Amino acid sequence: MERLDCDRMLVAVLDLGSFAAAARRQGTSSGQASKLVSRLEAELGIQLIKRTTRALAPTEVGAAYYHRIKALLEEFDALDAAVRNASGTPTGTLRITAPMSFGSIQLTPALLDFASAYPEIRLDVGFTDRVVDLVEEGYDAAVRIGTPVDSSLVARKLCDARVVLVAAPAYLAARGAPLRPQDLAGHDCIVDTNFRDPHNWRFSIPDGGTLDVPIAGRLRFSSGEACLAAATAGLGIANVPSFIAGPHLRAGLVQRLLSASEPPPHGLFALYPPGRHLALKVRVLVDFLVARFRGEPAWDHGW
Image (cartoon, rainbow, N blue to C red; front, side, top):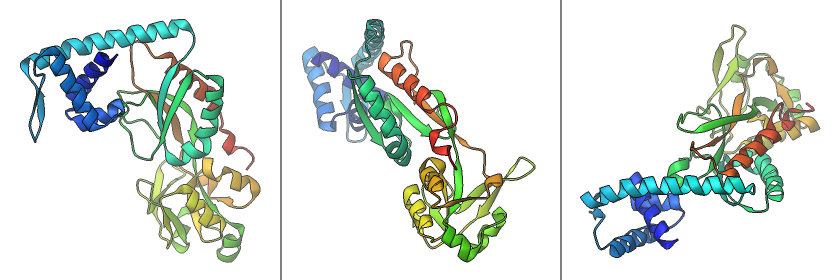
């Protein structure tokens, strides 16, 4: 297996153009990545990569070896996946990435149930609001909100994910409720800096189009949960995903505003790299998430 590790590292280095990127994809350090390639060169008795301080490139022999070993590794992985799938028991490590708030609030309970249902699968889950390159960084699957932009990935929709405008009853009693999106100019708005354009909130208009309304406020957070907490404390109006606001809406801690003007919901998707033989561990994960979240999501009930 050590030789396979060396070969996989060589392929990763030449695919991505650097030891650092290859190390991230293979889940190790840059130093270990360099050692594996050097070990392969020593075993073969020939230089495979030309290294300089600025760049690296395959030697003539290295390029030929790379193309052949990459094809062989793909065949090996396809065979491995086919055999594992035929066994009927999903096993191995699943590396998953998901947005921070959704991951911690909604996805974690689902993954705990998944882990109980599939005890032979090991989960390695990373929560980040950064868009992760699944192939480069070695992830098996991602859960993302919004229309997928990477056409090289397979996407399965799980459910809708809407954004709602909320404020506490105390704030509304003191300041009144906005009757139309433009009225937000006279209100304290709580800014979520995770939004692509945090100082412009988007609404639907009767002709089917959208309206971007400039907003301002003295509170800015890079967290939907923090924005909701500020709104619950009566400090302003927040624009937050319903998967965060749902329990507060059900409890009456905040009220929904301008519901008729809410923009169309985003989609919640499971994404994974394509392949001739989808690993059984990925297939059962995606099927589990589809079954868990399909239809109207639980967090949108009761308010």
